[in-house]
Amino acid sequence: MTRTNLTIIVAAGTNNTIGKDNKLIWHLPNDLKRFKRLTSGHNIIMGRKTFDSFPGLLPKRKHIIITRKKENKNIENVIYVNSMEEAIEVSKEDPNPFVIGGGEIYKIAMNYSSKIELTRVNHQFDGDTYFPEINSDNWNKVSDEFNEIDEKHKFSFNYETYEIKNI
Image (tube, rainbow, N blue to C red):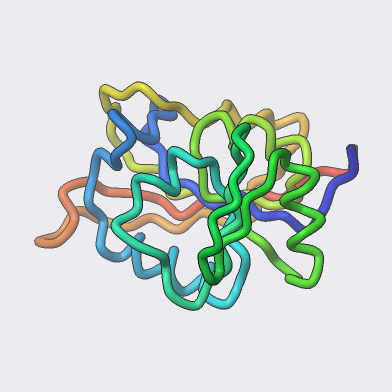
């Protein structure tokens, strides 16, 4: 498997929780704005359950859905594939596709990605879906920006960026 320009984007609690019952656990408006800013105009790669949890299509993004099922739905800006390799192949015209979840897709993507954009929510949450541990032998933290609790954000959080080491 070859490292690509694939970027993982995720928000996780201090215990790596990313969700419960196929839903986000917290609401961080500034993080949602950052997600939109970073991913707009790019392909977003996700599992079927993550896609099914959306209220609708995210504007200005092509949705690449990894599923075990044979899908032949014809939806504009949605492509169904059966593997991460196929998702990368159909995203090759995008200089920076993003993997946006869920837990199983993140585990697979760790072997292909060269960058992680992690929002670390500074709280431990009860959940049923987790982000894989970031191994410091393989990844360098290249930036870390702290965001305080305020009237719109119940939890403090950090924007952490990791880049793959030459392994």
